[in-house]
Length: 242
Image 1 (tube, one colour):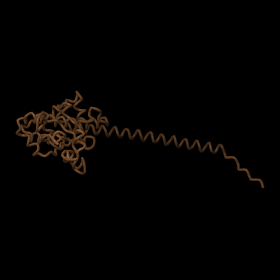
Image 2 (tube, one colour):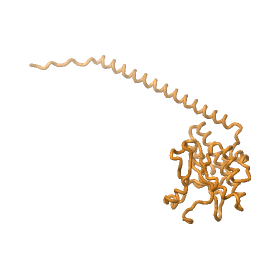
Image 3 (tube, one colour):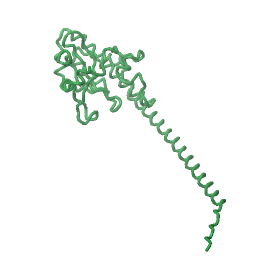
Image 4 (cartoon, one colour):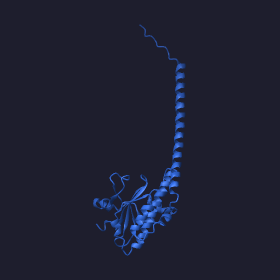
């Protein structure tokens, strides 16, 4: 008639189970800490190996923009582009040679060739510096965020003024599908599977009245490590010429 009372739990047994659980937790935390230390050591070893590989690959290569520029000495625009394909290992040239050839016999062709060589040398040095910084430190840093930041850094040795580099187009161009299509150029498959991207970023090769040549490029240094030169020729249409 009376409900049988249950026996109280064994307090000592519970304490023993709790102590065992705490010990297991502490052991697991210790193993996790050791695993994280091993992982960090492996990452440091990997970064050091990358840095050594880059240093070895750059041995004998020209140092900085001035060093690269010294190897771009051809007397024609076509020749400068050919030399850059050999010297500038982090650049990919997909620009139409006919567009560039149209600039060859202009009265301003000589200063344009010099500016082109300055631009290609600076881009190559920027891409190389960014690659080395990531290998050594894991991050590129603010002075290597993009080509404009590199040119702004007084210690970079860049041969271009900050004002010569534009990372985007005007709002008018950006909102105009036809004008954007004119700025869509070929890239290698490893840069984009579609093999074509919009290249709004550009460098002023010549100023003043037309053709006021520009060089459009695609900065893929954060992914493939490359910079693609997609266009070299007369200034493309914009708000004033549309």
